[in-house]
Image (cartoon, rainbow, N blue to C red; front, side, top):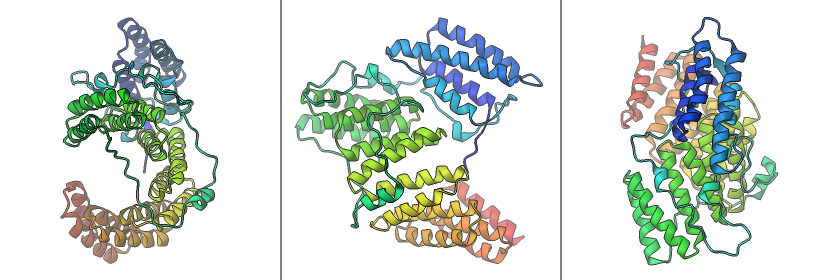
Amino acid sequence: MRSNKINIAQILKDFRNTIKAIATPREIEDQVNKYLETVNEQVRAEHPQVNLIQSNLKIAASLLDRYISETLNKESKVVQNWLDALFLQKIDYSYNENDVNPSFLVKFPDENNTKPQEQQPEAEVQPEQNTEEQPVPDSELEFPTINEGVEIQPEELTLEEEFVKAQQTISQKPNITIVPQDTKLKTLFVEAKKYAFNNNPQRAMAMFREAFSRASELNDNETQSRICLEIGKIYDDNDHFVQALNSYNKSLQYTTDVNVKSRAHFSMAQIYDDVNQIEPAMKHYMTSISYAGKSDDLIGQSDSLTRMANILTDKYDETAFDYYDTARKLIEQTADISMKGYVLSNTADACVQFRKNDKALKYYAEAVKNYEKTNSKEEIAQNYKSAAELMISFNSPNKARSLLKKALVNAVKTTNEDLIAEINMLLSSVEG
């Protein structure tokens, strides 16, 4: 379960990383550091003054946002919004740099490595087109924040209306990997994908840049959109979240393909979800659902609904089960067994949290049946382990032992050593 407790040391570290990541000029950095020094003194005191700490952090955030606004020639409250979101959490104001909450851990590019953003499509490369909506130049793009909207808003539909929209037919997850007709563009795109697959992000970015320029020459906006999506994935995979959000958002500016729009919004939602910014995560998941509904992508809808339900579960909001139920109804209409297992397993975890124990055991069993059909050993082991933990809480060691042995049989066929160790530890506790 995601914890909303965060130590002030982690906030200060990310604040300084932010200064570094946006290449803050020395004079502005010196001004910001004056306020951070005051904060640093307070958090190390025996009785930190919370109001003083918060006010100094807010001033420091406003200085950084002013610099960002002047640089982009566009109003920005990126840092302030990030800080406001953190202030809604349970902050421990007694400095402890060893107290790290992974849910809030935000990584920034390493200045000693080649930064992918240096190889983005150039800002001046613009398509000549007569469409009503023109793509936005790189220099004007900024990743969406809690209070800033996106290009297209989700339709105002209830969950039941979303369900009714979906066709009662088997649907496969759309494959949005395109093969451009132009020979040169096709070669560049395919080569870039190969480099990305082989974990060579710098070379992949260089090839995508060439492909972007070629697509621009051909006025091929859809390929440009997919290139931005691929670039965003490279940033995402390397934990460069700001750049990833920027690239995903740029992808939306070029495309009219609802599958691409659904994918871009889903990817942005995952980033916000990972850093525990709930409001924008929920908005992007719902927007993704709306676009997935237009293309009858039942799998995409189920995935987003389940992730939204997980967020609500972490907030102890029982409306989560409305989302899980709708996700199960949608996924049952498809042939995606793995996603069925995913939805059922997450529903079971939620049942445990809300002490619906009988239902939890039922859903774990159904999840295992689906994962067995796809031979997903790690997922099978995880679900057996979770069911066993539930049996331990029931004081039923014999049933727990049986489930744990099944979990171990599957776990040893994976490379997840932590999972194997956890299962062995639980086995020892019920056999002792």
